[in-house]
Length: 305
Image 1: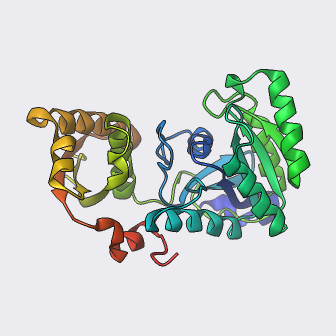
Image 2 (image 1 turned 180 degrees about the horizontal axis):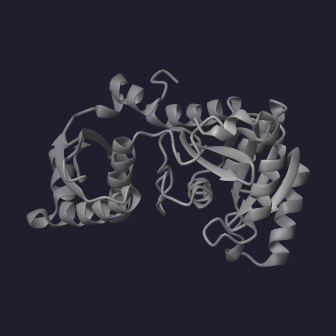
């Protein structure tokens, strides 16, 4: 633990839960604050499957963001587990932040979240994200509508992607988290082991490169993470799909798709580690993995949610 932790009266530390509808930009907020990729992002909804903690320092405060899965109306077991994980993050937090995609507005999913916050008497901070994509007059009207519907301590309007106006949001969090020693070492940016973070980066590339529904039918698991004598890392990661037909799509013609995914993932993992990575991807069929309790345990999800 860093020496600064001994200066209890001079430091603050706490947990900030980011909740919101799918694709509101929660992971982008987390990555922007940390300054590195700790939570995967893609244009598709429901990319984040479990809670991811992003850790960073603002002035004398260590802020631990809990990036949660998007909250939506669940249809299957995995959906229910993801939504339950999001709400459990609220219970663990010192500050709750509702992230809203300003361009999408006050949609039904966000209305349902606000209603539940009201019902449970949870006062949150409102973060209107993606303000670079909406006219100012519409943004002000949206802010007024949301504040009329919910009980928000403060409202911030930002673009997590560009960083526009986001410093004021971080300063508010830093000033309002409790006085405390820091929980993590100053250099730590996530509580996720590197091998799991690498697997998540591979899953992100699958979301980016594969067609609409297939990424939701697969899971990615690290099998080997080995530091070699020359300082490089050998990483073996397996992509599990439910059917042989899906395996063919992931591999691509002559292995072209898996090669493209592997190259993109390796580059990003190397940037994160600042070391050379030897990445080996395997694709296997595992029927009904979505109903396997062991998978949920690995993700920190409740199988019976």
